[in-house]
Image 1 (tube, rainbow, N blue to C red):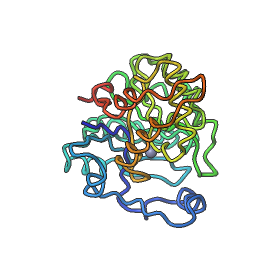
Image 2 (cartoon, rainbow, N blue to C red):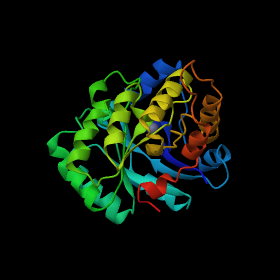
Image 3 (cartoon, helix red, strand yellow):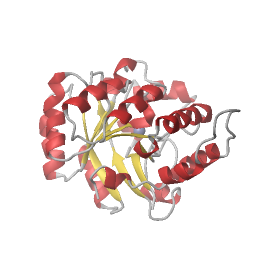
Image 4 (cartoon, helix red, strand yellow):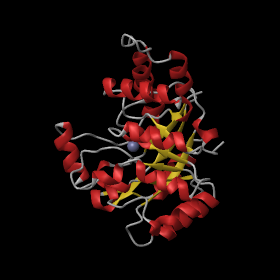
Length: 279
Ligand SMILES: [Zn+2]
């Protein structure tokens, strides 16, 4: 079975506001339709794939997917596990947290510190992290760069989550996209903390960078802390698996081993739901 720990729901591209939309068009050379339909997701993934589905809230960047939509989407598809999303710079986030968890039954939390413009290590968010830790709600935290000009890159750096993990050692966290291009920093963080993982979503189309990052993970002995993810609809599960396997075919550098193909297969088949306490 494949577990995709990072997939999105955008029900309607009209809901994606500026600057996210305009900056996306600038970066991608035109309009990209991000509307998600489950049939298309399932058709581009191996049969039986299970997925964590997130929306996203970041007022600064123009993103706001209501948690109700995630709840309705996952209720219709038992293979899916839904997360609520919070932008703690906005009033009302504490009510949204309790509503999403207690009323809607969502099972984790998506945070986008860079897109929302907040320092994830700031002590004022300890209430959020404490709630998640007590209620066993894993976090999916965006780390890594973006095309959105207004989003401060410094808040995308994995090192901030080191501080969060020190203060909340039982909190399960996934750092998205291996923190690219701060993969080395991301590996240093996941290596330290037993409950902090990184996903490898949306990286295979930069194969040199991903090969290099996985090779670094291999040297550090942290293959087991890497989780499979797609970042659908930006790419698909099938394309992500294919991209990872292609890296296994890359020869090593003289004096350095190639990537361990067995570890690549273990990554592709890792049960991220079990590791995040979502079985
Ligand atoms: Zn994503």
